[in-house]
Length: 86
Image 1 (cartoon, rainbow, N blue to C red):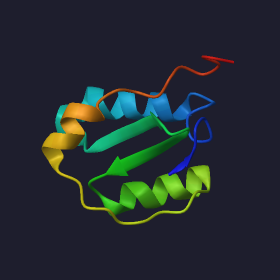
Image 2 (cartoon, rainbow, N blue to C red; image 1 turned 90 degrees about the vertical axis):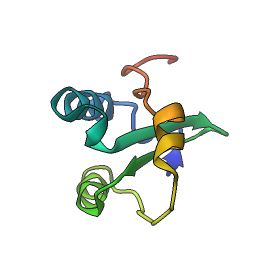
Image 3 (cartoon, helix red, strand yellow; image 1 turned 180 degrees about the horizontal axis):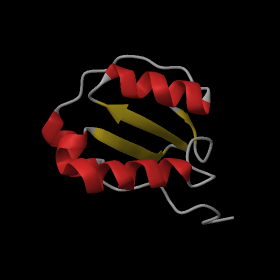
């Protein structure tokens, strides 16, 4: 989790999510949550993906249990394009 825009502002995260979904579809298990309460978050089914994102974006990682159906209903959107809303 990070303040809104801190993960997605440059557009790299959007590209990563879209590329992964093109290759793996819904089985890619990578979701973007936001913007809720001025925050955004990335959720992945594979801890190695989170470790890679943590290295790339420099944020803290944690563990949270979420229902797959909930994620597919509410977190399938991509982050805004770079520069949107600025």
